[in-house]
Figure (cartoon, rainbow, N blue to C red):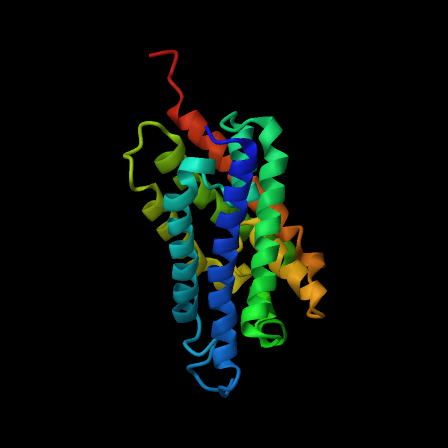
Length: 250
């Protein structure tokens, strides 16, 4: 097994890739659509494609980034790249307590560096137009509705992780593909509800970047993207453990 330092660096790099490519796709979508007439029927939702079209593209960007990270770094750190995943695995004793905080710190740092790098690459329009891809509930979505949506989305993600990556009976080689496509599907469905974070680090990086670069202060929404994903991850991990435990009675 790699040292904790190496595993933490792998988590930092993996989360950097996730946020750079995933939120980068959202930022560029908003920048492309900035000059479009917002009253046209083809500009409903986040960008020029409107609604599910944009969210599918963004979801695939996240999914491909996650897929690449899993195949590149999974053998080093397990490629959690998500504090909710780390806590979910810890809750069912699939991850040691001593490694939880270093993993989460590495994930938060990786996400923050990715957001700041996007400003360097795309300029201040990434902040003023793209909001660094920060997640917030969409109009008409209540605070606790958003928590529930994030919990459900992360539940689906972690249930998939448990089945294809953690369970030793899973077929090797397909974890990255299955997890990446699951994330893409969830983002396509719930992106226009909460922004589909499913990951406290994914929201933390853009929030911090916006704050440092003079963008919007959105921290009042941050508990949504901590409580929802962590609850969803823990429930999914516990349920999977229950469903796969050996029955002691006939």
